[in-house]
Picture 1 (cartoon, helix red, strand yellow):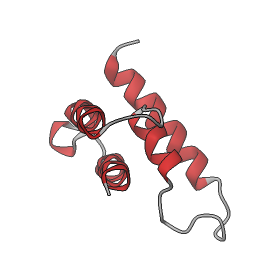
Picture 2 (picture 1 turned 30 degrees about the vertical axis):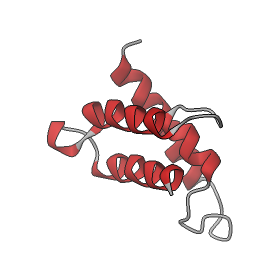
Picture 3 (picture 1 turned 90 degrees about the horizontal axis):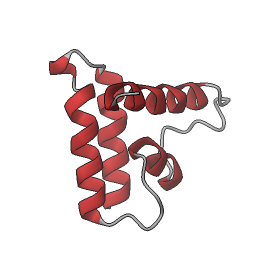
Picture 4 (picture 1 turned 120 degrees about the horizontal axis):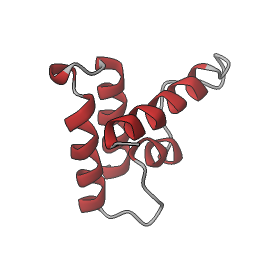
Amino acid sequence: MNISETVNSILYRFVNESTAKTDNENTGNMSKGEALKILGLTEDAKSNDINQAYHNLMKSIHPDKGGSAYLAQKINEARDVLLK
């Protein structure tokens, strides 16, 4: 499996899990655990790890490269949650 297929698999799994939640559970605020899952990181990830994972994912999923605007938004949100 190449990186693009891996990225798509992780992100689509996350999206499906997120949309399966009830309205009460889905507040629109991403948790740290969700952010780590999206970027494929562990709890001990440092800011340089977060940025590297972010850039690698955006290379393959960015809308300008034919990717999804929704998934790019989720990657941005995940980075922001972890770097705050």
